[in-house]
Image 1 (cartoon, each protein chain N blue to C red):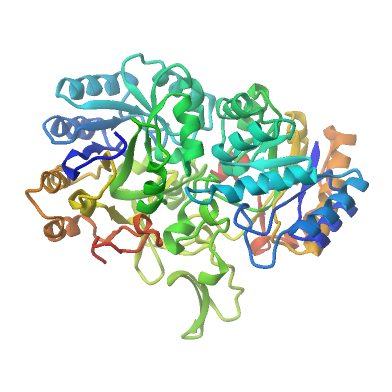
Image 2 (cartoon, each protein chain N blue to C red; image 1 turned 180 degrees about the vertical axis):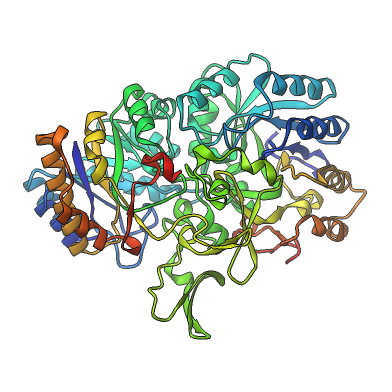
Length: 308
Length: 331
């Protein structure tokens, strides 16, 4: 449904792990998710193909366990493809035959178009209904709003959206802001990407980049750059006028289960969004933000996200 | 190998044509293109004059309509497509799927190129645009090594255009939100990165500080040159080191690898810089023209002339150049 009539119908999804964690850490993490209240889990390496804690079979095994635990499971593809080997892996994912794919680049769309239903990821650049409708015609059934777009833009979409198309927004986590050929974690270690020795595994929540006034500004995560502030739309879950179908929580190395639980309680109406602030703020050491959602600078804290 | 040159106004267009461009790319005077700067770009009268001048010299004109419309303003992009088509431009450079769909539907004879802002980095992505909209050429982001460009050219259903010289986006174009994160305005939605209205230069303790919407991007001694506060070229602290954590102020320069780009079959080389002066466009176009001609004549023995290199370096950001992602060590 394109418009949820009550906020209780908003589903919670867990986004792909954006960082490089060890195999054991990932297995433990997804075991806790099996019994968590998220409805949908996105799995897969979306940032750097050199991160190989999980082989393909490991992803499939975790996917099957989560599915058995009642979760809808989606496999997410790499956002930036450069090498043929990366294209080969996306092809393998797209032909898995069992799990739906979140396409994070047009290569995946090309492989799936007309063959299987797919989800359009936030990095596909769906900025207007013309683009959305074209992709729906090719098999897209759900889309994720680009992170820099707002609530009013989403409302504009909903006027022209075909029935049955689900809208998802990035509702908690560090915003993915950019991708590059260069690995900035390796650069911080004064080596090139080819010699990175997977050093990003030492930064399970990325590496803080601060201004010369020592203000946390961005987070380096290999070839990806994130916001240092944590984007929070927890207030949307309490808003009866909200028109979103799915709200995404992006994993961090600690407290993700607690964040999910708080969002779930707000969704159920047993907790007011305003009451979550003192619990959520410690999980956002540089502060919360929600500027994009309110047509402002992304780093701004507008609609009650709480400022730094 | 076609040389595609930037023009932010009529004098720049003439400078590009006079100095050896095969094609010139321009934009309208609004947010439908990725160089939406005050005082820049073409109104209808200038477009007509520019087209006449270029076409009478056998030079093509491409129009960049390469930002992303949103619900409520799509008509402006449709208008830009219609206008360009009616003027008889040689190609449109598009990024948004909705705009492409509109152009392919309404102007089936009009040649379409995929903008670098479309973020296509693989032959499958390029194939998508070729099959769905009949796109005839793709400009690829500055993220591929020479070997990867070669693989793309080999497998792509359509010719590939690459960047040859100019300011260097180190993030994948079309997917960088650093500017909108800080200012609310970025390349995709507004057509500009780090818009000038958010820039402040202030003096503090004998230092010059550059800020973008309040965020300190760099701080230099007063006798140093303070660059424009593009976020990715600022100085920041990571772990315990302060420096250019993302990239130094530098420009892309591919002269040293021109024979490689020619050999692997790159169809066109693009010069960045519609925001630059006519003098800049003239100089860079002249050097690239001479270099490409020399390379085509004798690719096996091509060596960039020292005078060309020093001229390009003097025109570069931070007075230095790089091969960027073409060279794996840079990555």
